[in-house]
Amino acid sequence: MIKKLTASNEQEVMGLLKPEALQNLFILGDLENFGYETDFLELWGDYDEAEDLRACMLRFGKNFLPYSKNDSFDVAGFAEIIKNREQAPLNISGIPRVTSKFEQELPELVSMRQDSYFCKCTNASMMNANREVIIRSAKAIDVAAIIEMRKGIEEFGERNDNEALIIEQLEQGSKRIYTIEQRGEIVSVAESSAENSFSAMITGVATRKEYRGQGFASTIMKRLCCDLLAEGKTPCLFYNNPVAGKIYHQIGFEDVSDFVLYR
Image (tube, rainbow, N blue to C red; front, side):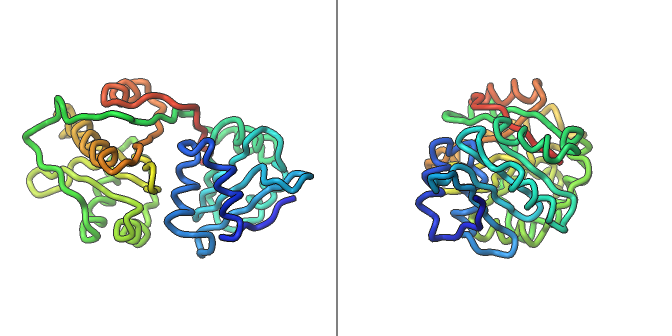
């Protein structure tokens, strides 16, 4: 049985998600930062015959994040909720044990599948960092320039950054963005998202092509990881490029599990 969940279900939701807390970083972070009742966030739960919560699915904007403690849950019911959404395009992400179940109900997902690795950092230092650059913490006034800079990063493809939402997250403290500037313009950037009391996801790491090879990306990531760890938060990230993975491992990341994104 699937039903909409509210703050009154907090205890059973946490009981479901926390055994794999890092893999559920986005769900836990969004619930901690935004609560259960907003225009852009919804949470559904699937109950077994004993009326125990066995799975849930979060919607954050156009992103759906399903989770189940095993491979037995009402996939068809969750898929129907996704089908009935009017917003498009839609993104679905999560651990393969759960997300792969949706490929039968939503066959178009097969061609949209992107497999990656999910990893965490438990130790980081500024050794071998580029000491000649200044890393700055971005403010709301910098967001438009950061979005414009990312449009020139070929690897990102087309992005639909929501400036107002990014500013809201910065001011709320669920996101931070670090930048490096050269000649008055932003040339390297890294950010956290879904920050919560125990973890944070690192995303959007990029350096303009003409400034690569100077250690900017690794330097800015090291600073971000060090700051998060100092606050008792575990930095996490995804990667699907072995070259990038090698760099992350050198910084102090270790693989935790596989992860799948459909978009």
